[in-house]
Length: 282
Ligand code: HEM
Image 1 (cartoon, rainbow, N blue to C red):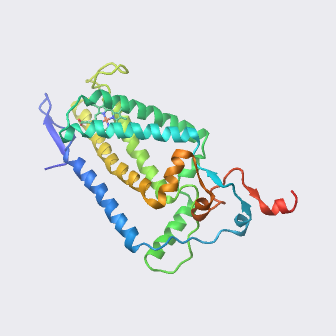
Image 2: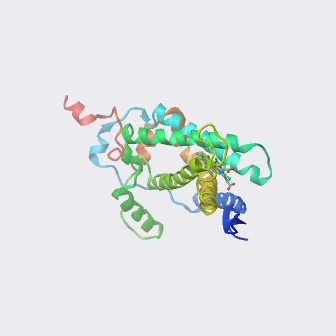
Image 3: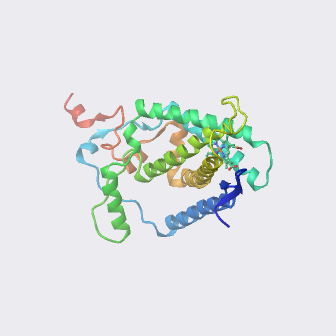
């Protein structure tokens, strides 16, 4: 049993037609195993998170009670994209596990919503959000190395608190970019294979071999999203992450949570005053 399904083209060539659907179960079980192992590790083995003390200049800052984290536009994007993603996963995979319905139309419509929302997000994040906040920087790598050494039982300096996003979130976002790009680019081409009001149908755009590879890449990235979505939802509902999840609904988090995990020098928040300059009468 391989990971691809093959067929013979009209020219007698052996071509891949799509992934073997057993990969749906591999992705599902892989995601569930990850969360079981992680939950056991956190419950029984992980130590309390420890961070280096804030710099004296950060300690003098005075913060509002609620720290703004996601603008209304960013939250709307997140939930539209999430709805499109769930619609894509259910329409793609339920028919493969025995729940039959006319899935293709719902699927390409959800795919179009996802594609447009991602194009919007690229423009929004590039020009209106802090573009670099989601990319790993030097401090992330230095701190990851310190955390790894401490995990291995070596004594080393404590890592700093996080910027807006911890390294794990940044790496997850990077994997989602690659997987999302694969599923969107292949999905747009696959719209030429089905009847939509967007493109004229043209199944002769590619050779059978190329179409096969497009379907395989779409399927591999698609099952990848099963695991990625399970992991994402798992972290969103973990008790210690609920303030972060709530901020994706209400837009802000408490000052206490912000100061516990984030370095005010690395994630600079608007509306913060400096007690020292206020005392100086500035
Ligand atoms: C996480 C997102 C997605 C998942 C999990 C997913 C999954 C799948 C799967 C498993 C198939 C069946 C392929 C096969 O038979 O080999 C499929 C077909 C299809 N997908 Fe997606 N897809 C996603 C996103 C997209 C996007 C963004 C688009 C469009 C922009 C799209 C357009 C299509 C089309 C048009 C088909 C039908 C092809 C046909 O029946 O010939 N998909 N998708």
